[in-house]
Amino acid sequence: MKIDTLCVQAGYEPKNSEPRVLPIVQSTTFAYDSAETMGKLFDLEEAGFFYTRLANPTLDTVAKKIAALEGGVGAMLTASGQAASLISITNICKAGDHVIASAAIYGGTFNLFNKTLRDLGIDFDFVSPTSTADELEKFFKPNTKAVFVETVTNPSLDVIDIELFANAAHAHRCPLIVDNTFATPVNCRPFEWGADIVVHSTSKYMDGHAVALGGVVVDSGNFDWTQGDYPMLTTPDETYHGVVYTEQFGKAAYITKCCTHLMRDLGCQQSPQNAFLLNLGLDTLALRMERHCANALKVAKYLEGHDKVESVNFPGLESNPYYELAQKYMPKGTCGVISICIKGGKEGAVRFMEGLKLAKIVIHVADARTCVLHPASTTHRQLTDEQLVDAGIAPNMVRFSVGIEDPDDIIEDIAQALECV
Ligand SMILES: *Cc1c(COP(=O)(O)O)cnc(C)c1O
Image (cartoon, rainbow, N blue to C red; front, side, top):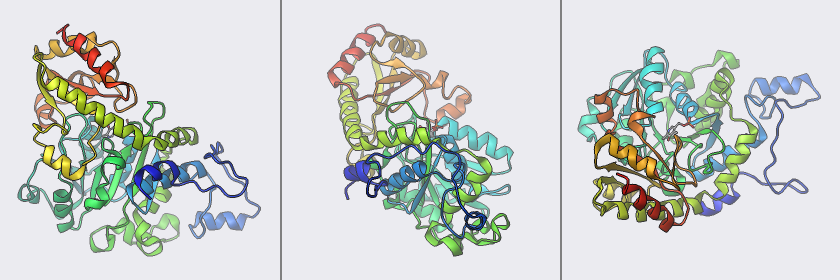
């Protein structure tokens, strides 16, 4: 089935007399008539639900839909995008291991890696998103366990050369983990280009209405963990009576360990209510992405010709340095987010934002309503000036998230706000 159909149909197959629409199973716990059956669930000998921290029918169904959208073997929902990024790394890395990450990643991911995971003993090197194969090569060490990038970066809108990063990672028997939040599987399917694991903040386009925080980890099933150095997956897990994930679960080893081990221990599960809302968003994801991208291109073209605007960064513009890469990986469009530098420095940027009427100033991004944000003073304010440059963020940069309203109304709002600059 095509992606538009999967958005609506994948995951949920009601049997006779069951609800047509995915039900919210709002129960922490599930009943059994024998202690023995429950024991088998604990030992992973049988699949079934017993506690929502580990698995829940609503969550499972929505995870299945997202796995189908990305073309993976399995997926696990998390309470937030941050939790998904955390688990994607800690599922295969422990203290003493090393990860190579693109420097152009979401600010929250950068802090998670550079501070929290570093404090826990996992070492990180941050590399340019435009690194060549030779440049990347220098960062691999014997203890490198993963490479982490974003398809289209929030907010600098760098487009990553997925194949180049995947080849570099695979040459060192490491998986490539891709945060595909901004592109969504409607515009880009990283597994088709060699990525092994995909993560999303589903709080953005997937939910699409800014109502439900969430995240997801998706496993392609393509990476052979037995060829690299991943004892967490290839040697017995004593906390599950010695299960060896690669032997018992084969292609689904990574995602099974995410659910059984890390979700059990970290407990960052999404709520069934949020999963229901996420699923409603997914139903219309393909339709909304088409409109977001078409609107963003119109807005970007308008801004490009405006004399109050210093520069427009949108990979859909032919003048953009990432245009070719974007055409290769995301021919239908990248996303609805544009970043613009307003003339008049930081003050100019702030005056423009405060002049907008339809577009509100919010931290959020990538939902149906047009909104704006000043990254240097909000999401990325903890970065040093040097780190800001590495992450591609100028003091006068405004992140403009184009919604699905009529594009003429969005442009009219921008026009009147630029008069305030
Ligand atoms: C928002 C975001 C995250 C973090 O997700 P939350 O759901 O806010 O925890 C991670 N990656 C990207 C690209 C994001 O935009």
